[in-house]
Length: 94
View (tube, one colour):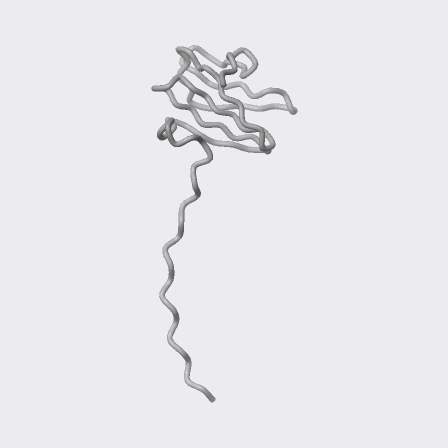
């Protein structure tokens, strides 16, 4: 019977790479579910929403987004300081 060989050192886990443009910095909130993910950047007034691999950028205006809700395949609504706002009510920007 051969003696046991020492274990190789473990490599540190690598974090996932951000999916948003680096020039936006770190989002104040982000999340996702069911093929949709979002990231909110209050200093730039930008909300990024990726749905099934397609990315859209929205002008969030004065909204301070803190969460999201989806139901039955409808467009997501985002929780803000003034109540919920539907993503379709935000202006799309390039």
